[in-house]
Image (tube, rainbow, N blue to C red; front, top):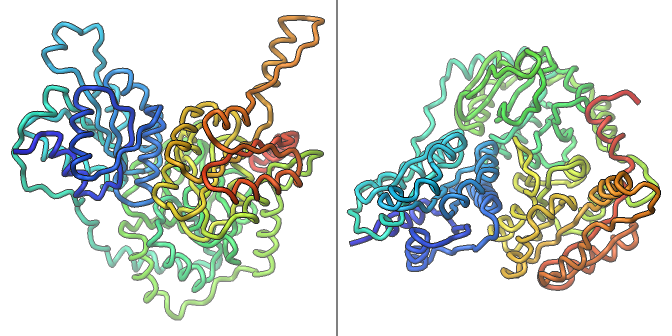
Length: 546
């Protein structure tokens, strides 16, 4: 008879979970790992629980199947919070299995007890304790709920004395309920709004997935209409496409274009993607989405709402556009000035090319893109470098640029790169991170080296940590000239077994990029950037005066 651990692994295998990530300890973790070994479900040993959660979340984002994490009890669960919050805010399907003290132990160790459900329940879509009589039911429930829109993490708490018990299999489905059929009346109303618009504009969000991209492109070309994408939807329309206008930042960079629109078509746009400020536009919003907005009238700081759709059509976005196509036959073409759109496109593309005396951040991205094969994947960390990275890394399809949404989790890029390389072993993966973000997950460099993943890690090293330390030292030791050297990133990389390069200008960056990609295994490039243009770049994005 199978054990509880066997049934949990069986449910994950039936859900086509590609691998487990985690930081296992004793107890139920070992039972699950053994069951996974028997079933041939790979396990990736990580160093940090929250990094393991990011790896699993990105796996779910790229495959459309749940990622899965094994975690130790107590501190392991609390250490997972950032990664679980990332999965919740990025709408990534994830199954999180935590170890737990047996019930008998808790009677004598209440001083060491962490209420996993109370801690994780505020982040996950659900948190349940697995018993011998409920294992098959709860793992199926977890998979279905993780994949139900909006997708997200689900927690299974597995007591150590339960994992090895015999359990009776049950006939359970791990397939979520299909979306309801389209409401034909709503689709016709949406078509009427589009027919009446002279200058419709599309903003594609994280709900626009790979299967929807072909419909979005055909729709944009048929109208025709310019398309902006959020960071999460980059690649939904190929960046070189003449109708692709770049990133919708929620700031001032795109305002000249968006204010010209008389209809905004939100294609898979989720309110969780928007920065905390009131919606700045008066044009009506037509929302085409997989699920009703959970917070359609969420109040922004200072009052006002992010946006309230004039009409919302729920269904598979690609299916909605397919249905709309027949209803828009004979419609007059949109009245966008092609020359004006092209001018705005070129101005936006050049906006963040702020000249600086040293190695410019935007040139790091541009040169990396130029010297990297088509179809390569870039992961981008939080920080000022994310603006040039997302602007100048041209993506041809969804999934070619991965970035954290919501919390904008610092330290995201390296775990995300590990997951992306495991999902796509034959594609080049570039990890764009800052020196601070790298140091937050430096231990995962060992994971990269151990797995032999050919990831190229490009570190935007602005020495900000060094400068802060210098200022602190100067305050504490007046009149004493002191110099604090930041972490030696090359030495750090080599200590973990990675090849390492330093770039101080475009010539050495070119050499480093070639060297990093012409030998097997992972490599790190310490790009000593000139960050003096960051302030001006942020002013451009946010709309500060010159």
